[in-house]
Image (tube, rainbow, N blue to C red):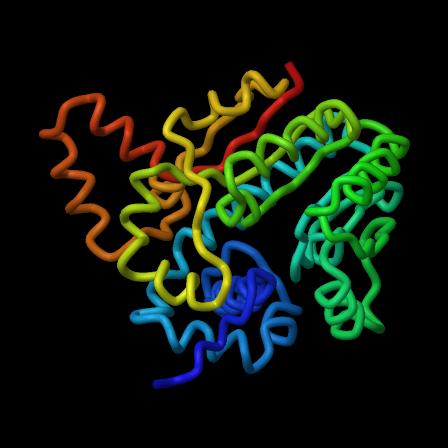
Length: 284
C-alpha cells in the first residue's frame, strides 16, 4: 500500500498551495500567486496526485481564494488596520495582494509551519507589515496572548481559512468566544461546511484525511446561526456554488446540475446553495 503523503493537518496547506499554483498558471488566471508552486513543494504535488481526480477538485479552493481576497481588500478599505490570519499555513496574501504598507498582518501557525514558511519566503518583501507568530492555538493561554496582542493593533479582521472544518464543535465555540472577548475583532472571515458537504466528502477525501490525522469534523447543521450565541452575526455569506458560476470555476457537469435544480423544492435548492461557503461575521 502506498504511503499517505498527508501526515497531519498542516500538510493540507501544501495541497491547497498546489491548487493556487495551478490557477496562477492559467492564461485566464483569477489571481496571481507566484510563490504557490515553491511553497507547495514536491509533497504538495504528491498529495494532489494521491487523491482520485485530484487536479479536477481545485475549483472550490480557487473560489475560496478569490472570495477571501475580495473581502479582505474591501474590509481593509473600510477601516481594518490589522489582519489576524490564524492557522495561516502558506497564505501569501501579505506578499501578493495590493495592501496598504501601514496594514499589520499577523501570520499565526504551528512552529514547524512558520519555520518552513519563513525559509521559503526569505528574500521576498511583503506589501505590508508582517509578523510571523508561532503558536499552538489549542493552548488556551497562548491563544489568548496572541489575541490580546492583535486587539492592540487597531480595528481587527480575523481569517480562519481552511481551519474550522478540522475542529470539534466545542473547539470552534472556544475560538469564537476568545475572538469576541479577548481579540475583540470587528470582523471574522471563515469558510464553512455543512453536514451535507461532510457526507458528500466522506467517500472521496475523508478516508485519506483520517489516515493522515486530519479528519473533517465541523459542519454545523444550523449553519452560521451556530455562532450567534457566541457573539457573532452573519454579515455576508458567499455560496461556493453560486460563486463558482460568477467567476467561471465550476465542477464538471455543474450547468446540468443547476438546470436540474430548477425542479427541486426551494428548501432543497437553498440547502444546496449553503452546503459550502465563505462567511463574513460581524460582532453582535
